Length: 364
Image (cartoon, rainbow, N blue to C red; front, side, top):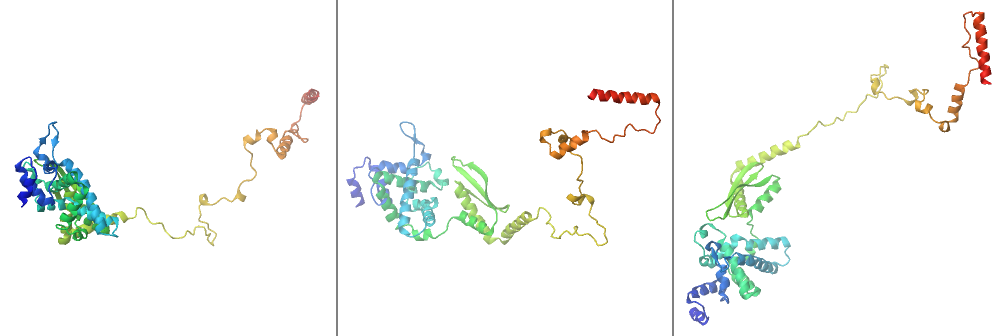
């Protein structure tokens, strides 16, 4: 019956009959433009190029299929779980479209057997099947549109191959589990990269290690940082559950760290009240003179004014300052500087009288 249906389709080559049959088994319908699906199943290791010399592989269709798959699965999850919050919906969608899930789907559907590769890549690249699945979704979108992709995922995948409820409520993110455990127990957790290299086919290889409170946990190797850290987290969680001495060492290291952080950096101030202000009854004041407070009434009040005050202009002087300055410059009526106990001669007396008379004449 199937051969009769295929015979009605005008195939460019009879050898494509097997590909049509396989795609019908996977998708549930026959392709309209087989070239999209051929490209979706062509791995980059083939190194095929077009007439312009550009590489021909499924990477562009993989990019398109990834975007379409996110939209379709997000739509399905939104309808399947009414009332659920955004975080739950996002987590469920990520579980359904993650590489591990797509790899299993590709293997169960038989997509892996249809991928064209050099043979060596399929032995090490754990993402080849999942990538081809995304590229196939991109091919369906270009060939038949969005509705065909929705029907394929909803009626073929989620209805027959995946229990969406079990996936939604099953925690498979080991890194998130380990981070949550470390936050609840307030222990320091880091992911340190040990090595980043490439395998024989040029694919990147990552090796990450979990470190808890400075103590080495387990390490994981994968073809992406996420895969490596997930494996390292899973193995570390298993070690924490199975090895009591490991978890004891972690909390001992935490206790030592927190103890060092909580040690005081200086002495605590004393709460004893100072009683040095009390004067003893015997009259002996032990307070040093340097520490005594100078009373304003004991300070010297009558002291010479600074020189700058004495040089101030008369217009800025107070009445008292002016009177004081005039009194100071006024000759005293009781000047006794010329009185001496020594007896003077007649010549000295006459000379003094003449000098005084000369002074009076000059003043007039």
